Image (cartoon, rainbow, N blue to C red; front, side):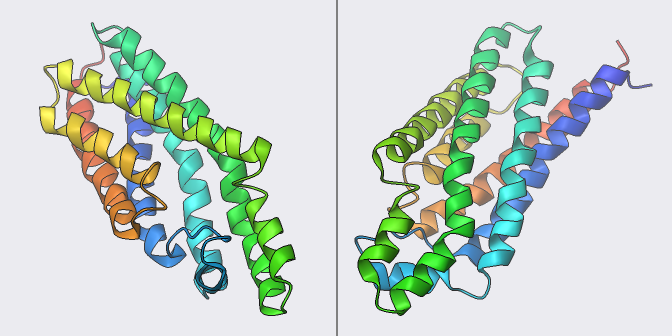
Amino acid sequence: MVSRDNKKIRMGMLCFVIYGIMAAAGLPFRGPVVIPGENPGLWAEVALLPTHDLAWAILLPALVIQLFGFFAYWAFMKDRPEGEMAFWGMVLSVAGNGLFLPSTGLLAFADPQAALLYQAGLTDEAIAVASAGVSGALSGSILAGSGIMLLIGSILIGITLWKSPLFPKWTSVLYILHAWALTLAVTLSYTVERIGGLLILVVGVVLTRIIWRETASSQ
């Protein structure tokens, strides 16, 4: 019989799998991340894609669901030798994810309206609105801090995966690569970003399967 705490860990780890499914499904609908000031025409085209609302209806909840996966992973690892590092990996990942949500909200809700301004010939106004959430003094600093915390948190979690005898070492490599693909690489390559969504799905399935097995005992 599985204990109540282990059931909670299992439910949380399932959130990693659900997040991976939603990320892999939502990113193709969203289109590439385009900096408005660099290519306003393409940015407006992406913002007005007919799949824009569907994409963000998938991706925004996915970012919240992922948080429960971080909590569950630390709960599983906390009494193991890697527990301290897993804790800080969880803390930084949760903080980075939380700071990322305001910018994603602007991309989801404000970009289409700003793109309509662009189509109406109000280019400067459109770019000003669209850029406010990602490249302003405050928003840019928060977004950069979010990416740094997510990346460092993922590296720490990746190290725990590498050091733990429970998990294949390749899960560590893929986990860190997924974090790079979904943070620093988002404006560099849409293909790489989509691969990042697939990587976290693969890692999530493997980790959940192993942790499911390890939590079979009620002890």
